[in-house]
Image (cartoon, rainbow, N blue to C red; front, top):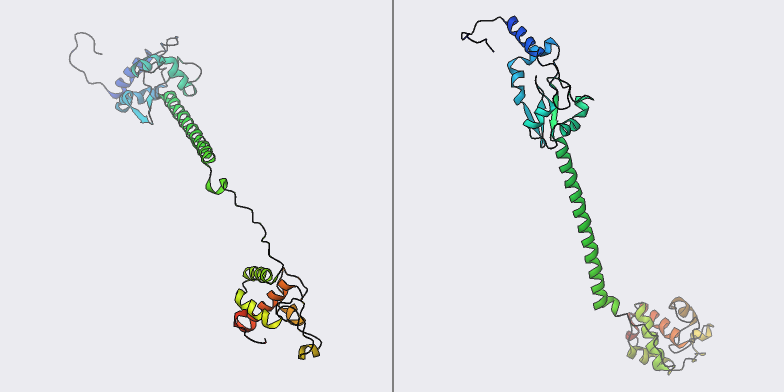
Length: 282
């Protein structure tokens, strides 16, 4: 500042202003003390740069970065002063811990132009807290899902799931009588499994014409008998025809009533469309 009694500003050269700045910088020697350290003077060129309008305004330069503030140290700053002006929670010690890497091992020695981050730890803690809260929420949600699943399973088990509670009744084998009626019915069941058409009436009608219901009937007088392949069984089937149209699952004995009927009906379906369409010798 001008001395007392001098009110007129005298013109000074840029060199004089530079010298004044250096003199001012000389007064900013660091005072040993954890909270009283001032920014240490940098080399003359650096001090001259700090004296420019841009660096003078540096005290107000602060960039907001995701909740933290970047502060550029100017001549005369101390960690305690910066912490106080920016209301740093934990004071200069917290500010130092947040910026130990930038400041170095001596918290009393900070240089003009050094950039300090204010609020970095608070932001990190807030982020960590948010992440922990999110994880806790995820665990809670997962536990709720498991709990709901268990409750649902228990409820279904208690009420009884329609498909599980009512066990499918065991399929009991159908007992067919060992007579013409039973043989025809059993043959119809096998034919249905293999997609062979035919009706009870059609089968019964042809059996009565061919063998009168005798499963051991054999024709020893017609042309087939003369050729050595007599017609046999309920529907009078020759062996070559029986073997060609035999239905799997039935006996290989052409005299077997069920095997004879199903083979004959299989042949009739191939030749006439169905045993129901046969009204004479076939």
